[in-house]
Amino acid sequence: MTHTGDGAGAPEDWSDLPPPGQGIRGGLVVVAAVSVVLLVVCAFAAGIFVWANMRQSVPNAAAPVVRNYPSASAPAASAPATEAPVEDGPRASAYPAKDITDLNRVCDESVYYPELPKRAGKAPHPVVLLVDDGVGFGGRIQDNGYHSSLGYSKSLDRTWTPADPKNVQLVACLDRVSAGSKIRNCTFDDPDPVTASLVRAGWRLRVYEAATGRKLLDRKLSGDDHACPFVVLVGPDKKIYASVSDRVVIAALRDLVNR
Image (cartoon, rainbow, N blue to C red):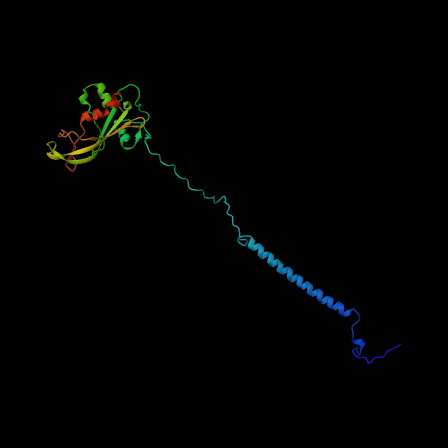
C-alpha cells in the first residue's frame, strides 16, 4: 500500500544531495590533515623542551672547551726553581792557607782550612793570635810578643806564634768591641809630637779550630792594661784604647793550647 504524505521536512530536489559516503570521506581527510599538523607541532615543541632541559642539566654546555697544548716552538713554561736555602755556619776555603794573614778569614769570613791539622793528639796545640783594635790600619795583625812572659825558646815560638800556617791548629781572634771613658793622656815624640787619649775598652776573644771552623771559646775581656804603650797607631780621633794584658790572654788560651 502506498502512502502519500504532504512532503514536510523532505528535500524538494534529491539531486542536490551528495553521493552516498562522499561527505564522510571529505571530513576524514580534513581531520587527518589537521592531526598530522598537530603531531608535527607537538613533536617540534617536545624537541625544544628536551633541548632546553639538556642545556640546563649540563653546566656551561654552550661554552667551548679550550685546551692549550705545548708546541715545539713554544715549550710549556715550568715553575721557577727555588734556590736551596743557604746554611749558616763555617765553610771550607776554596784555596789553602799560604800565609798567616790568610787565617784572618777564619775570624772575619767564617772560613776554615780543611788541609790544616785538627786540634788532636798530644799537646801543645799551636795557636795564632790575630788582633783587630778597630783603628782601621789594614785590619788584623798577628801579636808575636804576648807570650814573652813564658820565656824565650823556639818551641814556645812554634806554639804561641807559629810563622807557617801549615802548623796552626787554633786561631784566636781578639776584637775591640767597645770604648769607654778617658783614663789618661799619652804623649809620643816620634815621628812627630802627638798627644792621644788613652780610653777604656771592651774586647771579645774567640778561638776556632783552623781545620773545621769549630768554635772552642767565646769570651768577653776588659782592657786591663792602662799603661801608655811604647809604640801605637793613632787614629784621626787621637784616641788609643786600653789593651788586654798579655797575662790575661795567656790565661784564656792556656787550657786549649796545653791540654
